[in-house]
Length: 129
Image 1 (cartoon, rainbow, N blue to C red):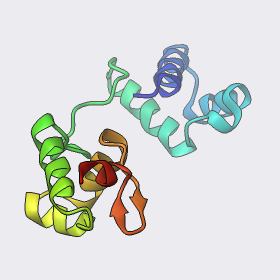
Image 2: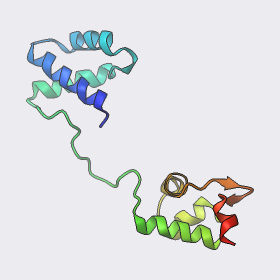
Image 3: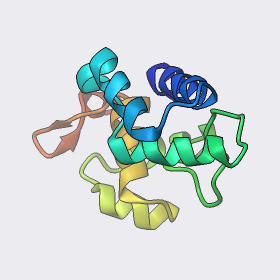
Image 4: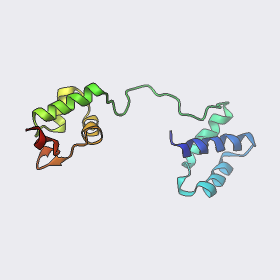
């Protein structure tokens, strides 16, 4: 969680404990945080949570698959597919490994550091020959 959001949640909790109404909280926080201020509806939602007795300002865990699932096995598999065929597409990799195209993109760009060069993946392909 972003530290600014966490700090703002703590401020909301403090102001609620002081008896401030949600609209007053929003006004005060907007003055202090400006463009970085949480949205009005978010502040109101957190005020309701404080009123309901919630003391934990961290996000609660959510069910479901993580946004980007990467591990060394998947990264190695993507790298191997690219090494076997420098012209392979993200879609083909996603289908082959049963992962999303977004995950493939994340692995290729962020984990492996590849980029498209003349319809082939990265300068790595030229070194593989």
